[in-house]
Amino acid sequence: MKTYPKYTWQETAVDRYADVDGLLGCASNGRSIIQCVLEVKARETMTTEQLFGEYEGRWLISYDKLKRGYDIAFGLRAHFICMLVMPKERTAYLRKIAHYNPDTGGLEWTADFEVRNTETQKSCNGGTAFRDNAFIDMYPAKQFDV
Image (cartoon, rainbow, N blue to C red; front, side):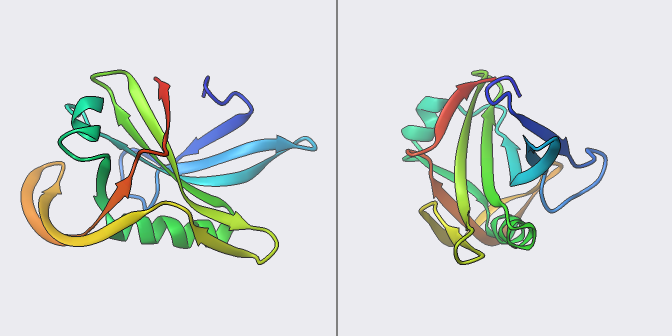
């Protein structure tokens, strides 16, 4: 990850479903320590103009995905972050969703989002489904080139 060179990336297998897409680690005393649980979504045709115009800065992601990522991060005592990648623009947005608090040992939601039951694409293979979706405020997200 050239934007964050001190981090190492361990991704889940791309040929099967996983609850999250990978883990980010950071070197500490000669070891790579898990810092973050990461969920990545690519939106092939989305543009920055669409995200902050038509979609009012709100990124749609399955609420179940957020809950599973949160639970895994809690279990690992790590942060939970999501990354929205727009390959068409070679741009990505990174948003911390939940922060691990070492003082309490808990995980605290840090991203503003609204949950609504909406009709969305069932899978990457098409179809439709009604499900609870989170609409994450992406205005505070960090933008970088990919």
